[in-house]
Amino acid sequence: MKIKKEQIEKIKTYTDEGKTAKEIAKILEITVGMVEYQRKINGWKSNYKGKNYKYYNKIKEFVNKEYSDQKIGEILGLSAGTVYSFRKTHGLERRDLHHNKNKKLSKQLIETLIGTVMGDSSLIYRGVSTRIQCQHGMKQEEYVKHLAEVFKPLEPHISYRKKDEKNIAISLCTKGYENLNNFYNAFYKDNKKVIPFELFDNFSARSLAYLIMDDGFPVRGKTGNVLSVGISLCSFEDEELEEFMDFLNDKFDLSFYIANHYNKHYQKSYKDIVLYNGEFKKLKKLINPYILDWARYKIEGSKPRESEKVQSPLDNSNPSQLEIVERIND
Image (cartoon, rainbow, N blue to C red):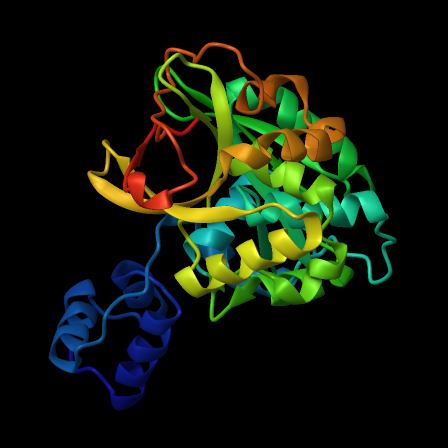
């Protein structure tokens, strides 16, 4: 049997569509070997993705129509989870379907957002809208549920997942809203998180408290008493840290200095900002109304927990005495 030119062209078309050699051979009424030979000599790689590839065109069509995974699943007789996994595997992304152009954001919500996103939370932009997302260990479950209450207008969802045999993570993710896009644009430049100075008209004592609950750590003396507090801001550049410390001084009359801490696990030094001991009482009075009970060990004089090892200089009025702050993050 001699293969025809138009059959060769069809082999290319069907290969690009993800059909198997067996399916193509049946359609064109030729042998499987002839299909495979043409693929080989022409360098046509199969786009076959598995037995569910027959759904590709339909799912792509429904995604373009902005159907939800739930609706697509109902039409095709699949679960929403299967549709979601299929979309991710085959790169069928869609714009965020859960957004509201004019969601009202309270002062408390904005101040909390700025503080926690400077810390452990993040903003996720999905083409049209932005959502808030964070993940913590189970010992911060109270904190995540508290954030869910603060972000309640943004319809947050809490989920749990097993990180390994011993640890479970708790995650929060809000729905996407268009009026969060300005916050995303302030926090992320060239896909890198930066300190959003353009939002700092809304940076308050509440914002500072949430930043400390996220990334703060107690600085203890030799007897274990808390002398001061530091904030881990190692993802930001030195120039940003300097400007942030100037802001904290101007806004709250609090003086910080940059210090290094050594992470034993990664065997690497990171940058923190540390409050001068003499200004600790002033800070505690400022943020005390906003600190949750679980985080009070960061600013109160209780003994260190077993998971916490912090060293402080005898006198941090001279920052040069502290070249390394050694600690374990919570």
